[in-house]
Image (cartoon, rainbow, N blue to C red; front, side):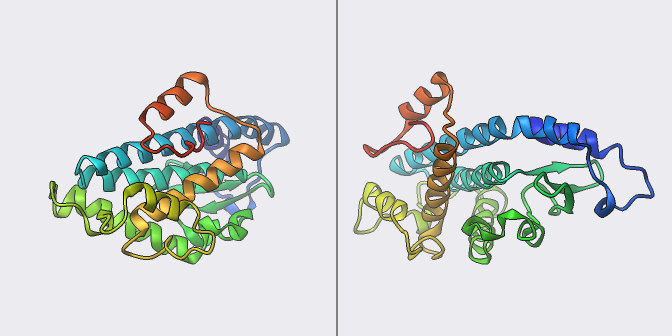
Length: 241
């Protein structure tokens, strides 16, 4: 659990049993305490996202399909969490279920059925409503990528050395695909089923990279060096540089 989530859960536990969560507000001091953790939690999730992504890309070059799909999913998952923290939205487990807290308006919202099954309606009721990462298209891409991950984990097991169809490079190299997805400003590939397993987390990674740059944040030296070491492309490693 992130520090912001831990503090929010603690503050939320002060709600009396008869008070609806929609009528419960935190004190200025509590909001300030949570706010102080947002930047570090965003960076922590960004680091988890870039490591997961880099390991997935390395796996693909070595013919690993199953673990690469799983890591690509987790890269997207951590990116979305980083984007929530960047916009002062804190996902947390209240003990009675998943919740969201929007520091900008001091309001609580129902979260998803788990930390991985998001309540997109609630997310789009917050300041995230204008971010493409939480659009209907993004919701559908995330759900499909999660299905790919669950297939690898629980249903079809590990089918390596056969690559998942959406990981096959066909007539282009992985590096070329990476650049096409990174530079896909019109979202031509991002949401397509045959591309989204790589295209969607690629776009998310660079969106997180932009948010980190806006705040002049950076990884600590050890993390940055590790991310760059496992980065599989000659192009700049996002988040870590």
